[in-house]
Image 1 (cartoon, rainbow, N blue to C red):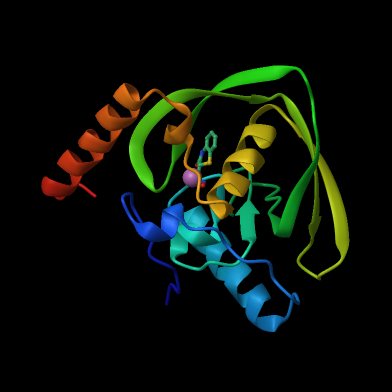
Image 2: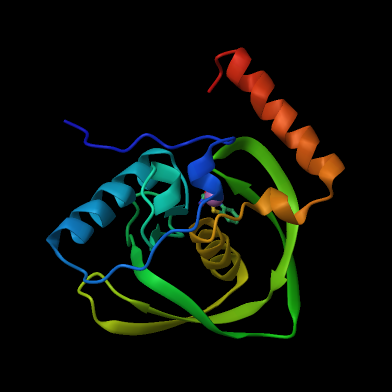
Length: 174
Ligand code: GNR
Ligand code: NI
């Protein structure tokens, strides 16, 4: 019944790889976005990038409402997203990642960003994001560039988190 992707957990080369631009938002890309959204809702998470499901094209999905049963699900689909403006003001927020399960850390990012992208129908679109949405879209675009939120932490904190994930894996908790 449920046609979902498996979410790839760190460490994995696909999470460190750069995703390639999409030439055309065709039916195959829309199918991928639908399946990524279902995978994200199931996880559950508020964002998911193609790398996390083993695909290296520049596609991400987000929904801050978290699950499809919400009163007003508002999925956002982005193909070839590009940050065209970042605020000077910065924002610190606790982030987590489906590819680094159960680990959270404060990450500092530009408070507001403007993003240009192709939408579900391949049309040019722009989004100005602040707050959690801003952190989320920057986090997802980082994934497309092979960057994880732990890459912003000290090596001490990063290694502590990576060891905890290893431990969870050995305990077969993941
Ligand atoms: O579910 C997620 N929550 C989250 C919280 C703060 C900043 C970013 C995120 S994204 C994350 C899902 C995920 O790993 N997306 O890549
Ligand atoms: Ni993530």
